[in-house]
Image (tube, rainbow, N blue to C red; front, side, top):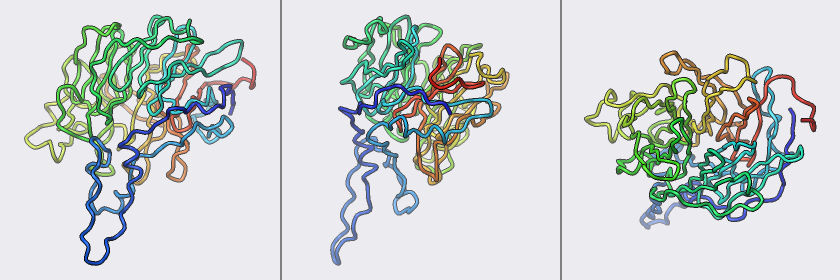
Length: 427
């Protein structure tokens, strides 16, 4: 496999933090038994929105499950698992850039700059190509969960936990960027499912989701939704409800309908519910959460008196607890014709399951009516002996038709191409 990483190996992790409720989840250990005659100590209270809320008590298998804390620093280029990653015959995978702690969402600038958001650190990165070399720069720091990024007409939009900002003419100021200017600051501040994925639709509006503030809860009107707004932050409106936690969406290149991944609830069982691929066909649709799961299962707590037929059903299921995140429809010409207009989906991989599922890229092929016809593996190898050696988050098509994949576990971005690979070091 070709390796071309040319990013610095410095520790771009100053200001790194892990969310309080995740640290609590990872740190939970069985308490020592009480001394004879003593009453058992009360379990420490879990913080609001903790992923461990709802874990079955007294279940040995469930007690072993908790979110997977990533390594504290990004992997060095020569330590990345590229050689272990597998793609279909004729495809190639290489390191595009490394050294970006918690590399997450991806966006492409007009001049070829690749922007990279993060969730657990305070930075937005820019991967620039200059004089035949690729370099990683810190574009913005001091941000709070800047997971969501989108680019349009020279402007980069950045979504933090509770606000959206922008940097105009961003590719002209990468070496001396200004502080992002806030355009919308009315988003909730809940940590649980508070990080954002954002995108700009064919209607030239910015789409911003807000997840549920917990595993599966009766949320208020400000949560469990997707809203859109003008690019200056005005005119915001809710276009979909019943959305638990979407961290990836794209518009079909022919129908222009919005498709989005949605993560299913935890602690119901190891095999249900599955994550969903959904499609918005009209403004105001409700996709079931917290009442109906995966389109055909009523929630055991909130489903009483409800019917799944009252909600928009998913167009496809993406695996139990697979953490389906970033997705893009492939419209390039580099890949074979069979890949035209398929949805390429990054599955971050499960934590709420004894045997991991996901940790890969899959191809969702659609029927003529827009529902999912099949789900096929595309990039695998991130799971080894039921442990992660990488976790894909987002995908991005470059102008030449190649595909980028971010990996927040290793702090890297990979590039997938098709055809005979070029000689390393030559462009």
